[in-house]
Image (cartoon, rainbow over all chains, first blue to last red):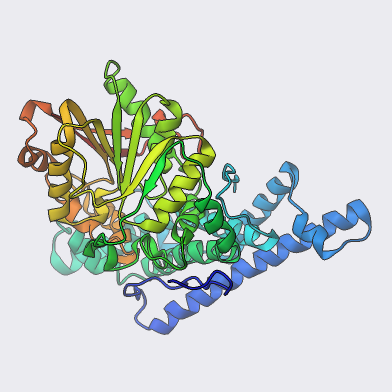
Length: 104
Length: 376
């Protein structure tokens, strides 16, 4: 604290407290973080590409400012949400043969 | 994700930040709707039969279930993804806040004066708050990151909206909607002059109350300075007159017999067993005769089947909600008695999203929060 207002402020990125380990090998926990974060970035890139395509459809040429200023309308937002849902189902498909024929 | 309602303090997202937050929200929805439910067949078709085979009986409580479920690969995989999603909430929000922090700090300093803000730099932050960063929010609610800092509040505002997957409503005030709707139904004739909300963080609940009841004097307390600075500025922007002050709900500076209603919204489970008794004692002390104490919190363990009990406690062990473990088995009616409330004036109730005005994604899911009521 007490940093001057001129210097860029860096906020903490890690929570205080022991991190849970779920797998016998903690390296798998680490791998899961990599995989999920990477999936987020692919999704972000897809949305950005979608923005570029919509802008090109509308204007034929675009600038970076156009991309930053772009906000999806309801139709585009709905399409993106559906695309993301399908993407999540595809990438994070769980193996769960044991879960079939569950009568509980 | 349906966007949060705008107010002057809300950190604005750029193109990719918004997209990243959308992903985290949708990933959490995916986990909740597609992956989490698989824990049930995993347990009943794989884990339970093995347990019965080994022990000749079923598990008797959630603690026994924990010992075997935490070794199952399906549960491990879901947990690892759930944990990552929780960390990603904050990480996806911090970028926007970090970029705009000087501007947000300055805006908070210049906010209006329908309500007020009193900070106490000497207030001792309780151990249950400093032991670990609650909900994995880096820096928690009390750490200042800059001068006149609002970072924790700004991160909390967008973060809790994603955390709840929109369940708090676009005003981030769903719990306030629930308690107010419940209160009006339960006490239709109760006149209010002065109301206190304990553990208010950014004031999501109390500002909703203040917006709906502009003639009532609202006070709100929390131990965290940055969430209070942000909360005050947010309240002013939304036109809610609330008097915020930095105080510990266990021991406030309010006078005896001075409030008609004392509330809290999911505060108790973040504090200790001793602190909960102190909060109830303090509620009793500052209530006027006939005044109402109304604390809404997370479900307790009483009567919950072992598997559900175990799964519900995921947040205790994996999301820095350690103190919730103590609340799970507490007898809150007894806590009320010890605080001074008479037996006939203690009412354990519950309320859910049927009391919300907003239609959230979970408006009809039937989930109910316990509410413990004591009338002085």
